[in-house]
Length: 109
Length: 115
Image (spheres, rainbow over the protein chains, first blue to last red):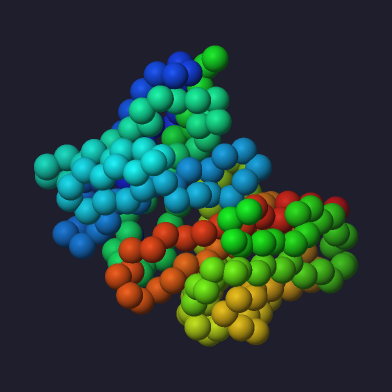
């Protein structure tokens, strides 16, 4: 399985943008970049995914580097409810999802 | 509610007990999964079922026995567990085939404590 590297933890102030980085230097041409997050006492939930182009949805934006070796999940205006562990995952079509340690995001009021 | 329901939410069992965890999905998905999340460890994939057939068992001890009677239901039967099996057990479902880009939908998990 292709590997991703994320910081263990990050802090951000409430109502400010948050940029969560992910490195995936060994990504293959058919790997999609997926992001999930896990709120306290809940199962993970899907956030966003992309292949080459930047993607936006109601939850977040995904910025993908031109060489695809890194990506950034952007929360445009963090709230306290965004405090969670964020996982960056590489997935080739129907491959199973393997989770790493993720980034624990703390939001400061 | 995510569309994947797990019961019970909490379970305390002795090492000699037999219990079962249940997972039900109402999303029309054709694949289901069991994950284990121990304290301070990443989620570990335990079992994969596609179209009711087990396609993956990641070296899970035989004291964990999965069952998938249909595409909507998944069980994890537990017997003679050890205290180190205490963890959050998460069920997920997805739709395989098609574009292959659909994400997983997770339940809220069963918090298991083995005493």
